[in-house]
Length: 98
Image (cartoon, rainbow, N blue to C red):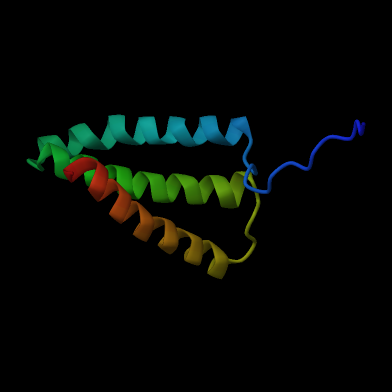
């Protein structure tokens, strides 16, 4: 019987520090900008949709690029942001409006 540990999956590449920073960023982003948009007269669902789409895209890009150090060039960072932004547009729409 072998006692060597099984190889860890490649999908688990984040640290708990990064995850807590990301979720903290999203929480603070929502606490600051949702009331601000509501005061400006924006519908609550639209405010949630916009703030979460932008916040998740920016926050996850920041964590992956600056904290995890996964991407080095601005072209990679831009491609990551745009792909996260387009994915967040769809997923946040389905969550908020469906």
